[in-house]
Each structure stands twice: as structure tokens, then as C-alpha cells.
Image (cartoon, rainbow, N blue to C red; front, side):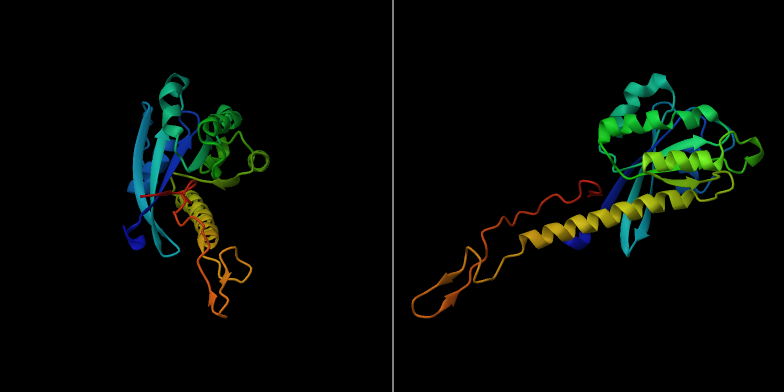
Length: 224
């Protein structure tokens, strides 16, 4: 397969307590619709959208996981292989805010450390908020995550969440690829172990015997 035929795919898991707006978020982002009625996600839901980052197509695969404990055994299996994570809580639900650290641990237990963003949803309900902006910022800082405040209902900053993660992952992929390309380039130097000098004065330069096999540089970002 030629390099131009490769497709970059990013698996993103959206986690958090039930009722914080995870399903509505991916519906808004992928389909441009908002459903007011709440329906509990049974296990896992899936949607995808393709966007362009730095002139390259990136397919974002969004996995919406149930927030109830009875589905833990199911949802944990879907965390595996994720390259990015959205930690979501509702600004009107104190318990969802306090559960964020536990959600982050659940994801890290399956995926290790991956690019993550903290989302404070339902900011349109400012008169009902039970989590201050300072509290949210302090949590994001302690987790090493960027905080993005959203209103899925009003379509505020929803696209920013996924573009931020896609851009961060794409940049990491390019850096890893650049590093690998540099390490597999043949060395042409009189100081290379492959340098040979014949007695007739002719200098023969041979490629260094380094592996030319292409390494997997897409550990953090998928490629199909």
C-alpha cells in the first residue's frame, strides 16, 4: 500500500457518569442533532466522523460507554486500544465531578497514559451549577488535562473537544514517524562501521547495516 493511501484513524473513548451528556455529545458532533430526552446507554455506542488535520484526513471513531457500574465488565473491554479519552462531567451534577478521577484510573488501567481532555458539560445551565470554574480548572491541572467547557444543547465547544485530541494525536504521530525515519537512514561517513577503503585509493561507501524494517510509529495514533 502506498503512503498516500494510508488512512489515519483515532479511537476515542468518552467516559463519565450516566446522564452527563456523553451520548448527546457524539450525536451532536457526528450527526449535528440534539436529543433532549435522556436514554441510558446499554453497554457501548459508536459513531465516527472524518475531519482534516494539517491537510490530512483523520477518521475519529467515538466510543460512548455506559456510565453505570453494572456495565463495567462490558465497557472496560472497549477501552482497550483507545488512543485518546474524553472525561466528562455535568456542571449540575456534583457526583459526576467527584467521580472523574476514578474514571481516569479505569481508562489508564486498560490503555495506559493517553491524550485526555476534561469536559465540563451543560454550562448553559449556569444557574443550576454545583461545580465552580475554579474547581474544574484545579481538577484538570491535577490530572494533567486540558479543560474544555461545553454546552451540547447550544453546540458550544463540542467540535473543539475532538479537534484538540485529533490534533494532539496527529502531532505525536508525526514526531514519532520523523524520529524513526531518521534512525533508519543509511550513514555515509568515513567514521561509519561500514566504511571501507581499498588500497588502490578508491573509497567504497556502503549503507550501514541497520534494519530497514518500518517500525510501528502509530502506537498512540492508529493507521489503517
